[in-house]
Image 1 (cartoon, rainbow, N blue to C red):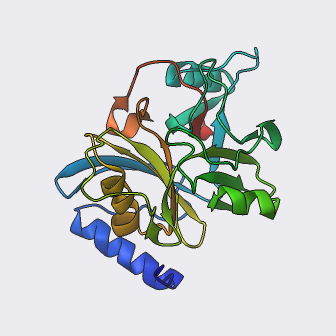
Image 2: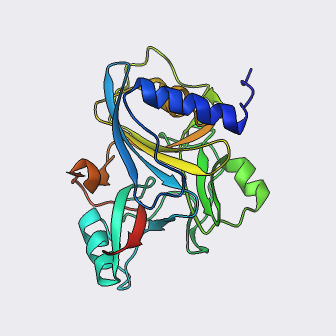
Image 3: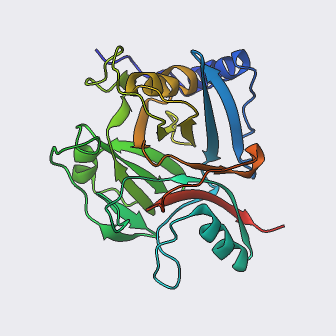
Length: 258
């Protein structure tokens, strides 16, 4: 049975307690800068960045020239030319060989790819999968079929899969003793929709381990897997800029330069 969601105040208290136990501190609500941290959980190091509702969190795919950004460096350079800076960024969903998004993708209210609700091969098709939605004033991670029925008006949205945490419960297909180990990244959203947490494991982990970081440390009632084989993080505050094969969708927190 799915556990009952805690009250906002109690959930915030538990989160503060978990961060304190890990030697971390929570960023003040509404702070401009990113809260990027390292944390140890069950012997594995994780890195994660926090965005607050109202901050300029966006999805990026193509530049003004129509070309796919493909890298944190190219995206950062483009923002600098606009008088903005990239505070942190992460790959934001699976993509085809041409780097086009797999499943729903919405940028500045414009839908570039449609939602996929059928079961299919690979991690994306391991239902339930979900959608990360950025609206004015809140974030959400929503199961894909529920999202398709809801007609949500997201300013930005990306679909991926599988869901990691669903209303406080781990995905039913995750096995504690699985031998499938990968570096993984994902996104979870607080119960009140005011915080989004972007997490990457710094070592290979199972889905079960990764999902429990969201549920047990960050206490996000819903969380979504973004990818594994290409998982990367750009976090200057952690002196980190991962590199590798060209990316498809990227999620990033933006602020004015200076």
